[in-house]
Length: 361
Ligand code: ASP
Image 1 (cartoon, rainbow, N blue to C red):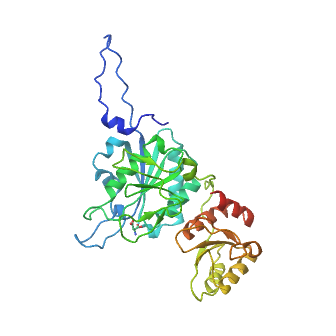
Image 2: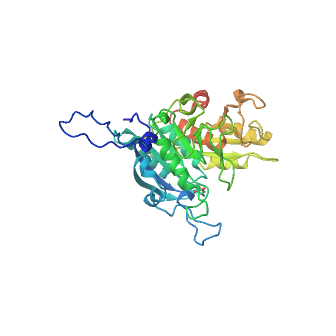
Image 3: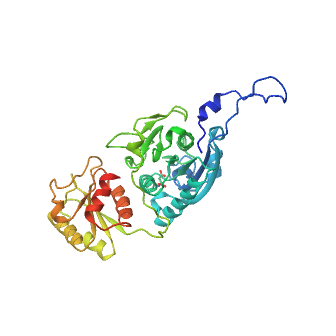
């Protein structure tokens, strides 16, 4: 269980000499143990290496979790750390196989009384999807922090070491408990549901467009939480214990002159759900909307989201969701809506129930 003492106190508190047996000296304060944090590594740029020094090109997922930990000065003063390698991939190759392996191992560790929190190192490309997936499948109050970096470990001014230091500090912070899965990037904390990657290469790559970041921190110890736990934790979780695969859900990107070709192809490929990355407020050409309505009539779950990057897609604004049988994605971008729809489909095919899930989570 949680130590009630912040790691920062551990760093600054004097270590008292042990009292002598039989002496009248007051018993020394117990020096509390450090929080026990497990780092689950999956690869990404944070573990990336440049084959040629000084060049921008690099390969993700080359450095082991032990080397990552060794590269961060003073990390061992923040927490008692162990590491496990779950995968060594660029997160553009993230797959259901790795997700399920990661979620199973994370669940096991979180159930252990010997683990106080988890840090997951991850590539930034699909970090928001994995963080949101974990927030929907891990039933825990212990802190779970997902972290990546924009620059490889061998780059000038690599951002990985400080991001990892900050992530461990948050995972070891009792105030992070009950806040759901958090993402740490560039001194900023984000909620898994809200965060999205918004820049291809900048160190400040992540934003939480609709409600802003969940907090801010400075070299680990001074975390300020902006949002209450109720705004960042998921209200319902989806058990994956018995699952070996998730239903197929494809994203259909809307644009000028779009027709229904890709909708039909996705349904033919076995999609059980479709997410529209719509223009504007989740819109599409008449042909595209009609193809989606046809899919909905055939029992495929259709969720309308937007390619815009911020804002909320609500029911029945320009598109008549009631008569077409669609679900509105609310504030979830297409890639997040896809994650939630896949999990929702493990429980129900009922459109009204799926809409309720989108409004709650
Ligand atoms: N392609 C890399 C990945 O997602 C990018 C990064 O980590 O920043 O693994």
